[in-house]
Image (cartoon, rainbow, N blue to C red):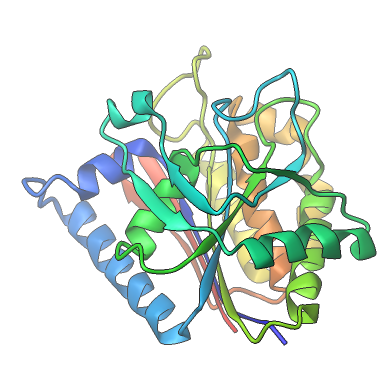
Length: 278
């Protein structure tokens, strides 16, 4: 049977990537972040995964208002990205084969767990997937299965639904007949405003950031599902609902406290980290 062996969640703030990859930036906060990613890469290596389940959103690149699924599984034989306009901004590229058997197994298994996943053979991954993949597994030597979550185009699923889908994913993976070791890597957001009155590359609401990370990290499932409403996210920035992918990770972990959870500030931005060693 397949087994989930590691869960890692990080932020995908473009500023974080640009500073991490700028060799001339030796500020203490960036050096600490580089050390953290080195530790996470080693944790992932030690887990010995055969495939990476990569959870993120799509920034209205592959998916748009004409057809917006809540949760979509990419099942083409190959994944690559990001789009040219993201490359022009200096965001990282990544390509890898897709474990099509696992992708199809997740879609089919969802029907037995009250989740009707959409699927696509025509997609690109954008920086919500390429940043965690590049910084956690830069070798590009493992197949992936990308999962896209709608956190940008209301109405979006509730925190409880993200948690339920995470739980279902765990059950589906462990029911698959293949003897695969699966690691989940994920990216999301803390408080942030894109294009609005509070638009900034930094945190809109640091108090929200620490409060929400603590709730998920402690495994307080009922508080997470009760408190993290769309309206509460909106108070802290128009794209703060990007935090919901971390709620899916909590579901994947079946609600247990994280092995590591914290925030590492870098200039105006807060960078979240979650790890569950299974």
